[in-house]
Length: 636
Image 1 (cartoon, rainbow, N blue to C red):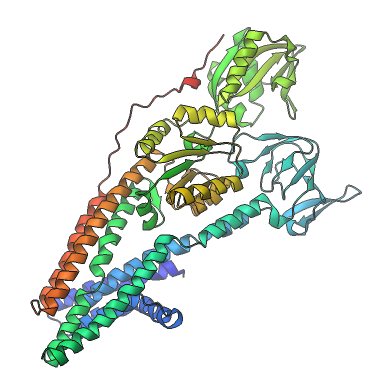
Image 2: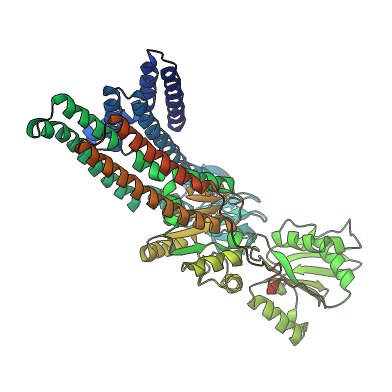
């Protein structure tokens, strides 16, 4: 059984025995205290054991030890329920911490599983041998079959192919590779088989760097964690010193009886317990986390939700984060016989699984009238597709597929404008004549503009960091009015930019959805993953938008600001109550029952205040423009 499950079971057992003891006490059963004692043992054993080990081994005093002493003190003065309640609250906090810690350890193992383990090594005779990737040497020649993962970094030796580099760049459109072009391990060969030359050892590949960067970030403690650890150590020491002083000083110097001095010491141990202070933040944070979960946002720890309120800079990946992740046809120009060209265009694209082909089919399939069922289409690697219909050769693909000298200047200008707008342009040729051209673009999500505007109005610096080409990135960034753009970025470059922002702004966020975003997500103060993204991005991230909705990021920021206000109110209130109770105890104004009422009453009040965070925060939505300026489909 995992540690987090054991912690949850201990918490449940503590709660059950605590309620059972309360019922038995109410009905006058003499041995009711046994049920409370079992609750304390089940709920406090693990944390007390860890507290003692930490104290002895690391010379560090923690609240776990104080919780155990407070529970024992409550039992000594006969308040068994108080002892059980203190134990339950700390046990619940420990269970949540255990769950979060264990969850965060899985991403490294998941990343390791994505690395290819074997490769096909070619010898001088052309014979292939399957060997472990770790045994490959720089200069080795490998065979990469169609549909296989590229096993290691290198260069393409012979042939050409379309490579799916989404694992590295996050971009959905495959990249055409030719001889001497660089190849990255973990990417996928979508074309025919080719040979490659190894240029890096397995531990130096881009994918290996991603793993190391994530591992490094996960093992670097946050400033918040360090501060809490120091505060905890000091708090426990002060209380542990104060208890015996509270007993001995009045007894020896103020003329109190031993019973009265000991009684006041035990009251102090109860009222000085951090129960109310813990409740100031924990229930409020849990309520906020539950609110987020109900609205499709998963927070992997309260610290990330709290930090959102202090956000100073936020960076977004483009594809699948700010945009829909799939290209659509934004412009279609048919220069002659529109219906015939459209029918042939759709018929040819049906023979391809390329994302651009799927976009064309999605746009025009319903408008196609004539279906060429027996159409034979030939793939021309690096250029596109071609077919012959009634002795006429039709070509579909890049401008280099045909002689472009016959294209008139006006058409050239229109095509140049599409390319300047960052659009991918494909062409349909009838023999030597261009009959149609289409512009495709991965357009922004409808809610993206509103979210970017919200963060800018809040004084937060917005940045786009993408592996896509600069023109495409600028087209999207200009439409969304993003402050800063970085294009053509590899994962390592994204990480450097995020580290620079973190150093400059302290609290920054990175929003992404791909494996290539994992190091940046891990190095940001707050990593945010889109729910439709890769498992690695979601494992590494601190926050996951489960519904892939950017509006939920805006809601999360508003929720964090509200959480900060409520936690501040709770801390000030609970600290004031504890201080008043301590002073009242010293001046013998209160007795144990009043101390318990004051202590538990303040706890209940801060919990109720925190539960206000369960209410969903409404978002003021702007009028969302369905079609962006570059999303107009036109026919000539």
